[in-house]
Length: 420
Image 1 (tube, one colour):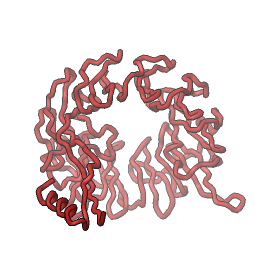
Image 2 (tube, one colour; image 1 turned 180 degrees about the vertical axis):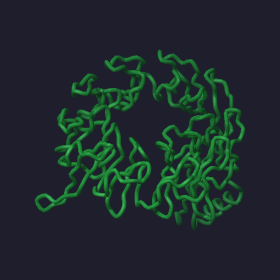
Image 3 (cartoon, one colour; image 1 turned 30 degrees about the horizontal axis):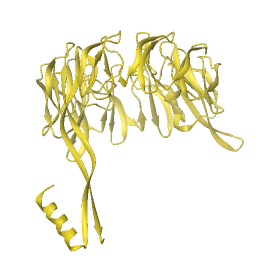
């Protein structure tokens, strides 16, 4: 508190007319990030306020294709290589920069007060000029772009392939892309020709070889949504007869196929259908997630367990928290705020003693016993890199992002009172 505030407070108390107080409401730390190797040694010393993440990228803050996005205090976002050399020099005009996908790095830049999207290669060369409202990562050779509220597709070098004319659009999958125009959805191929005409009120991208489509119909004087599934050739393989009590906010991506099963909602409960539309697992669960490695997380009486493709409860519903992603035959679970790993038989492979725990990448997982210091354990649960970092992230390409506390940022609330 500076001397002027002190004088003001003293005078206020003396005259008895008014007084003020500053209350400490938070004491936060900025993290300074760097990168360590598998020996736990700094290969890039902590110096970045953020190792930034980007909306389209699932692994936001890891090295990918030899580069990673960082934020340098006073300079802005940029991209470095593993030797800490700038690939894309930092600029304050960058709003965000993604990581490399198929040799391309997406970025958002403030130009004339307006955010515009463009693209670089992994050498820092500008490939796509900053003129679009949106550029999505390349999928099946094409990149979705948005300009003046319309969508189209370009190739990886920025050449126009499919005219920018759609009201909504999605990236390609299984050789088809879901698009919307004049209030209706359909699917196009990579040349822009319609595989499925604009005929559906709802449509979502292909997953596991099928795409969900839906229409609004009137039943007994009320409008409702019926949905079914089509294959990549546009043939309806599950008729649009499914309805249930499908909540609007869950429609679409919560109903994709995975491992030959898709979720359905009926009478307030969840179950699964197969690719013929048959209800092979009855609606009986409070919540379910998509199958992964032939197992799906389910919620029963407020606890989580796992079922197989036949609906058999193979891991009892006893966990307070549980991951949905199986990897290498193990999954992360928690009871009473303690984390550990189990295998597909429900056997504990890493003791549930950790306050915080990440998934395994490159044979190591981030772990903390107290949420104050983080290190890395191996697949036996042993710390192989001591818990000495303020926080840390997964390994990727031999490097992991880790942080030390940088400086304290104290936040105060100023209150003014009158009278005694």
